[in-house]
Image 1 (tube, helix red, strand yellow):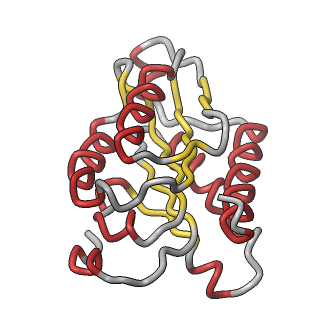
Image 2 (tube, one colour; image 1 turned 90 degrees about the horizontal axis):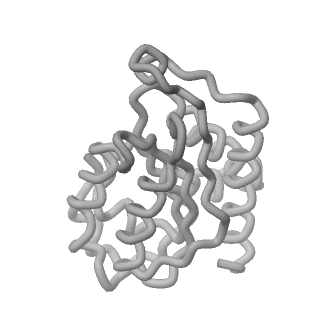
Length: 180
């Protein structure tokens, strides 16, 4: 995990934090595509360094406090966000409560058929943080309907990866320009 003590740091938050969890590779690929887009939008090495991609299990409150915006990317499992993503929210919720209001966020959900349950759950949680949605929810339906298809490694269509790159680029640019 990242340094919890840094959460008391008074430095100005920087850049975009992309938090992800994946079981079959789809959410990881979507998060990586968003990160690639965010990096492409940045000119300086310092700005590129502020575009961070961190697996949910590794995120600490300091990571959330240190970012100006977020993309949360996870699969929907049994009509809910994945357990590892929920654990990240559980672990970080109260340490950042009252300290990140108004910051930008977007979501990317990898789903077998629906995705709305995970989307709604994340939206309810970040409403408590008073984050500001700055992009329409992205739900990538991979149409996995059998146990074998659900458990199999996923390949995300290029069109959807391109949409995630565009999302990452747009959020990074908006943050850099002070739009969000």
